[in-house]
Image (tube, rainbow, N blue to C red; front, top):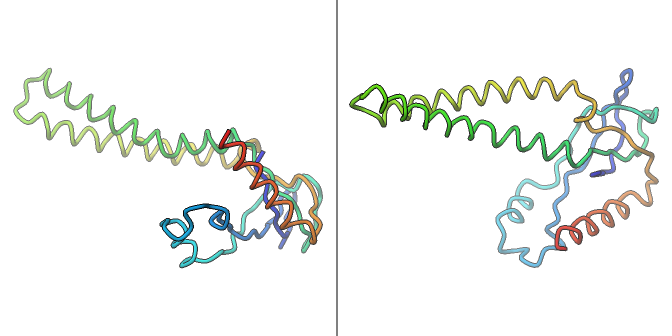
Length: 170
């Protein structure tokens, strides 16, 4: 489970609006100055993000909390949102080429391109529908999993980030 420390800024029913500070791991990276991500992080700065989460712990306004999101939910959503439109683009292009070849059309490239674009548009429509379904699925939403102590908040996140980076290297 991925975790992040945040501050509750408002509550509404079973949900809470929280504010988090975006962070990068650039300080612990060996490349640092030669990386495009590090340069972008310096230019854009650490922005504040506001998101709505499921308030499973009954947190109130101005309390420091810990957010949690299942790793599998993030991986599945990222695959669906990035890969499916590309897969449908390729399948549409292949289908267009086969269709043009089967019908003995002069311009197979045109049919391939048109069907590829149609496949991509179908992928975008599917992605939009998938996003609406996942927005209502509690398993794919971040939720409050505990309260954080103000003095430990930064330390806790730093330790988890380091241990997560260590597990990736193994």
